[in-house]
Length: 121
Ligand SMILES: CC(C)(COP(=O)(O)OP(=O)(O)OC[C@H]1O[C@@H](n2cnc3c(N)ncnc32)[C@H](O)[C@@H]1OP(=O)(O)O)[C@@H](O)C(=O)NCCC(=O)NCCS
Image 1 (tube, rainbow, N blue to C red):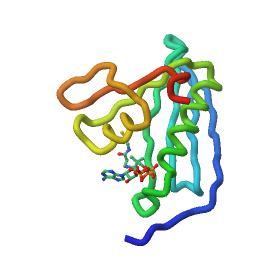
Image 2: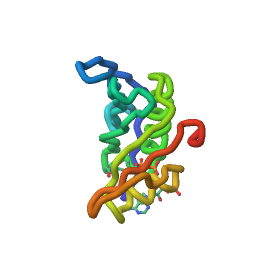
Image 3: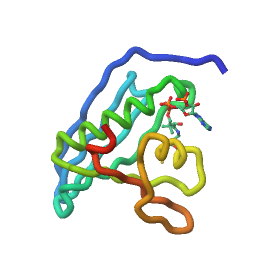
Image 4: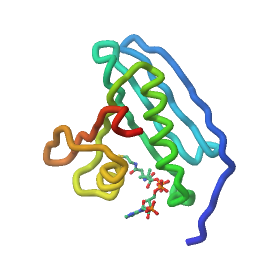
């Protein structure tokens, strides 16, 4: 399939909630998105979710770029660790591990991966 690319731009949509704070990061005109959340009860750990690159724009490095932006945003928000969930034995699980995330816990469907931010830089 022909690769499609989109000019680089990045939007940080930051908000506070009754449980904590979150940032939605939107890049490449909406082709790549991710959310970083920190609950007030666990301020050292940022939860990364919803990382998605539109299928026509994958394999351009956008996913790696967004994951790095999410980690940097987590640090800016005061976290020292990040965590996320992936389905067991899937491409995203292997992809996250390749980028330095390590298993923290798992059940029969999901694996929680994470690491200290300083080890992911
Ligand atoms: C996971 C995801 C975010 C990766 O985004 P991306 O922009 O394609 O990622 P990158 O371009 O940074 O990295 C692509 C790398 O993965 C590899 N890759 C891509 N698809 C693959 C596949 N199906 N199987 C194995 N490797 C694959 C590429 O070869 C490339 O490796 P390289 O850097 O050595 O060339 C994207 O595939 C996606 O949005 N998937 C659907 C949503 C999803 O599963 N999100 C994760 C939620 S847990």
